[in-house]
Image (cartoon, rainbow, N blue to C red; front, side, top):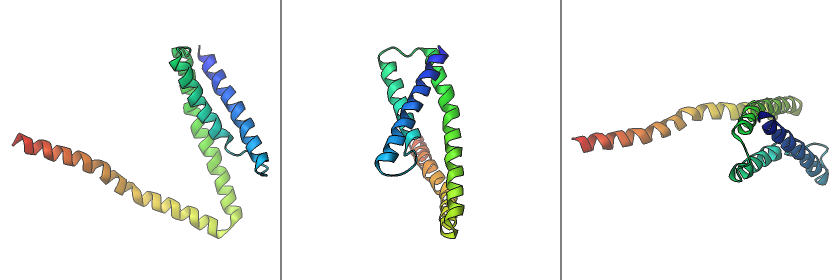
Length: 132
């Protein structure tokens, strides 16, 4: 049932947040350290374990896929908001570093695109040579 997939996701989230809080206390930071990432890794491990044992039904898997597809963009948006607030409070150096990272990432899009299309161009040209 779909609800079992949601229950598995919720359980992993609770454990991940708890472990993240413990990690934060252990290193002396008053924050959750990696709790969401731990929850996501735990979710992957738990769902794969259940799938291999034949305990994860199709409907449960659909529940996991549905919530995880919603969950990841929400977490990314929350993290991005925190990063922007921290950058504004951090001053001009943090804002400049963020802006440079965005500009560099945008500049690399065409380069990465050419790398991917270069492989198909090579395979197409070798196929054309074989035809002749």
